[in-house]
Image (cartoon, rainbow, N blue to C red; front, side):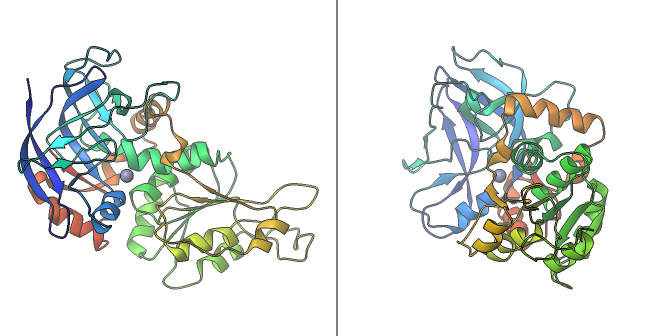
Length: 363
Ligand SMILES: [Zn+2]
């Protein structure tokens, strides 16, 4: 039996987001229908909204909910289970490609999604994007595990694989950056340097484990990082001053920060070790120029991290454990709450930089 759903639609062409009442199809053999509790609001959706709009799109890619129907081949969750929805397939060993979802809108057009859509009171998704959530876990703040936490914490924990005692700088301390800082604190990185343009956000980052804040509106953050991390050895084999963090993460993805993370990391010492690692986490909106000589002679690494290199089945239980043990302050990380009807207000607030952590829609 089809399921009624209220869904946010980003129309083709200009105009605000719309809310439409539609019918979801019956789940296919590998699909799950989820009545939702809450969904996060992520910069990726702003990029989708502000990019070219050729077809109507349904948006959102992190949420929580309860399973109300499951296809016959779905075995890891069943009706009545609480779940998290994410956009990275949960099981890397699965050979089947996730089934795409196409939704018929009330004017007869077909809406597309990037795999999943969670800005809706009810959603339908391939079972690969559905991860079990224990019944005793809160169902509101855990909605941001499916993207913000996975992306930020995973970049530190998996992509870079930071070790205890190593130094970390995080550029941009919104929902993703704060999740990166929390993971660095769990690991025992030191120092953990937060870089942002807002004094208020820098102070907030201390709550998550940042040990030093650098206000990039008042100084050159690269120079400041190099002052803080000056190495006793003095200069590299090629005469450059030896300074910089072991890892620098760009959680924004603009040209300035993408170019700042490479000179923020330390050089390698020829014959002893290789250089530090610059990690791009934010979705890039442009290409960049990097100093290729710095990359080569200092044996630095510049790498990307998508979805924090996470495997949801393996990692989401770990993030929930961090939360339960007080190491991942999801209640603080969720800073604003909206209703589905306030979706345009919510996306405007994120666009204008008013969200200090992560905002959610309560459904
Ligand atoms: Zn996202």
